[in-house]
Each structure stands twice: as C-alpha cells, then as structure tokens.
Length: 88
Image (cartoon, rainbow, N blue to C red; front, side):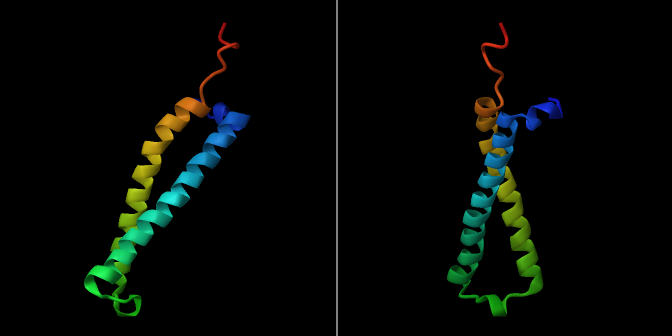
C-alpha cells in the first residue's frame, strides 16, 4: 500500500483513530497491569524496583500494540476503502 492513501481525508481519520485506540489500550492495559501488582502483591509504587517497572512497562507496550493492530484491521477496511463510484 502506498503512503498516498494516508494523505487523504480518510487516511488522516484512520491514523487518528489508530492513535486514539492505542492511547485507550495503553490506559486500560497499564491500569490493569500496574494496578494488579499493587492489589495482588500489596506492593506500592515506592517499594517496587526499577526492573519491575521496566518489565511491566514493556508488557503494557507490547499488549497495547497488539490490541491496536487487531482493532486497526477492521478500521482499515472501513476507513481506507476506495470509493465505489470511482472504481467504475
């Protein structure tokens, strides 16, 4: 796919929707991951080590990226589809 599709109005909407989904996934997964460590292990942020935060942050980033890619597939079909009138 060429980069010209992303310069159109539909392409900009697609990019903004993907960024919005990534931010929402980042918030939800981050809250579940870091909040789960606090609740399950009774471990407060001041007691956690640097390696704990690095590993959990990496996990949050990976899961948020996967969720975003899974949601971007149907968005791409809806927002980046070619106009049916211009193909005729």
